[in-house]
Image (tube, rainbow over all chains, first blue to last red):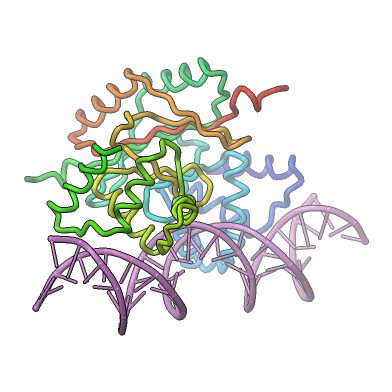
Length: 143
Length: 143
DNA sequence: ATATTTGCAAATTCTTTGCAACTTA
DNA sequence: TAAGTTGCAAAGAATTTGCAAATAT
């Protein structure tokens, strides 16, 4: 967890952003979990730890970290954005169960190659990509 | 345009939804375009045609049509959902230019097969899927 | 007839912003 | 100390909802 923290800290310095107490705590909390979380979830986690950081700051920090590529936002169709950290978490795609809401991660090298090939073939510089499969998971499909 | 309309009408009947004037006009407008549109766009189009349908009804009808599979929502990262009809529009994926905002459609049979294979291999019943590639398009990447 | 749908306006939810006070480098 | 950041509360934007009147079957 120290490595990620240092990379983020370095980035902030290089871009003349300040490493404030709030940002430290937010970055810690984000890299301490491998779960998907919403701005609200994160705010709650911090509050439970006794860190009363305002929601405005949480939103602002999430934007900053997303723009700088430390985290990525995900739309699971729940009306609010979810985030997950990218550093120390290999790229993967998602399967979302529309019945129970569970999100499953998967990774497929062939698909990754195809994404790159397709983008390249159209002169498109790929920055990021997101593949979501919506459906019914094994457990929910009982009938 | 007639075929899609009839399929939707039949669906509504079978599910004891009523085929109201507003719904007819909304369905017409949706299937008359192959563009992506937001709830607001649709409301505007209808208003320009002289159809003063309330936004609440537009939202409610979009939800209904999305749930029944006639249209699908897309998140292009603009803070609001876009829709496109599915009937009469072959499945495809999207490339979104984060610089100019343009959305390019593409289709790749290999990727489609892989999606199905992956879902199946995890006992997941795929309902729909969405692949988005974010990056810079040819025209924006000048430097 | 009666269950469904509509429009309106108010309410919700998520996110952003202005600004004065406060930190960080 | 100067520039960047925070918290607060207010503002915004997209979407949802309660309810009485209107409409489809």
